[in-house]
Length: 296
Ligand code: GLU
Image 1: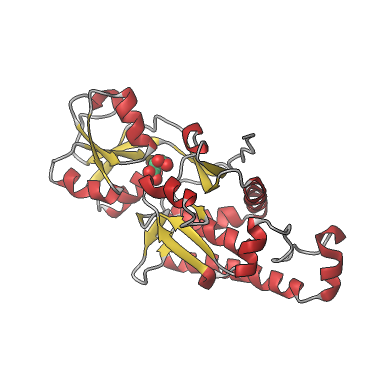
Image 2: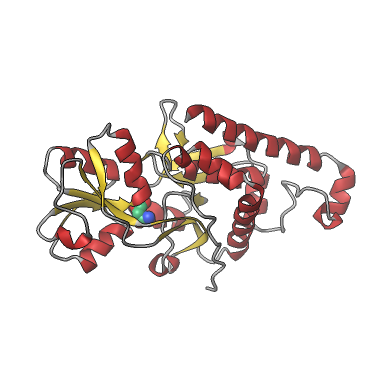
């Protein structure tokens, strides 16, 4: 997984090198992208836009998960790896910002909206479901992946196969997450146990304090993969969790530009390359998502 991640990172570096070349070329500067075939330049953004400000600063702060294998997991060097991390790097690269210009900040489920609203992060790429309630306070580009809520149990547990089996069970999830909200609202007979991050649920599952961990299928798949046969997924996903890139409310130019970046990456293979280097080492190949350019 490390080697493949490095290959993806090299790909991003090559893109940066290309755009750096083009911005040094005064002829291209004059024609810009209106010339038709010239690649977009890193500084070629509307004045006053978030893109122009970030490109000018040469740095971006990205919120991601630090404890979720396959999507965002901090490595021994303190730098996170995973599919969300690759998506963040791709956006940074399109702004002319290389990996040394990215500040990674841990966002857990409950602090994503506050961190965006408070300006602690420029964007959040953190298994972040797009929904109407969250759209009241932040904007979303994407989706760039479609997950679904699922359940994880000990490998020898045969009692639980659908969420209707959760009545009377101790069900672990995370504060501020859509899976926790779904259980609280639609399965009120479950005993919901909430922590700050999903890894906090793993030891209680092992020692029997909780019967089930519930969140998105792809997050659970990462824990199952790391568990050496200890955990398993129970049943099928039972919600839709489209993953978006969170950004400031009403920054429509930035949202639209990130959507353009995502669509270009779907087309030219960078999205699939990022997937294959990270979550694709464990999960099946996903269908290309369809970006939702919703009206405010
Ligand atoms: N995708 C869900 C959410 O955004 C669950 C995963 C998470 O908590 O990050 O709430």
